[in-house]
Image 1 (cartoon, helix red, strand yellow):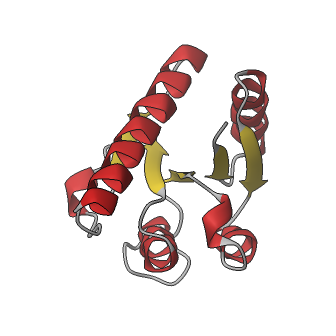
Image 2 (image 1 turned 60 degrees about the horizontal axis):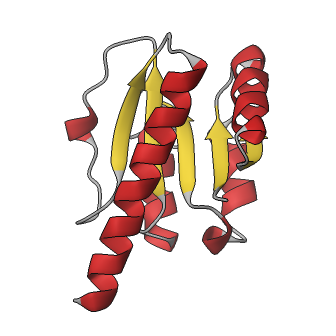
Length: 137
């Protein structure tokens, strides 16, 4: 099953998402900041298939430590990692400068456990399809 990196400063949401995704068979690592996430991801970029990131981390879109900067750094090391942003606030996923073919999505809070799993599975499927297309191309 896929390995997921979850990044959010809300401890309750981290525990909820981690617990539910583990019950569905995913391997999960949780981080409370983008710095912690980078420390986890950077040394082993091939260990993860999806990053689930709070879109409002860092608030300023291009500040060090922002969610958008984290996504770009992840893709710099491994462009096949799917990135699913989540937030309770409006978020323009089209504003993300993603590599060609990158699997990118947005999940609006609040969401149901089933909605979380559906979004993760759908995005992982798109990432897999993109990786296979690139390998053939």
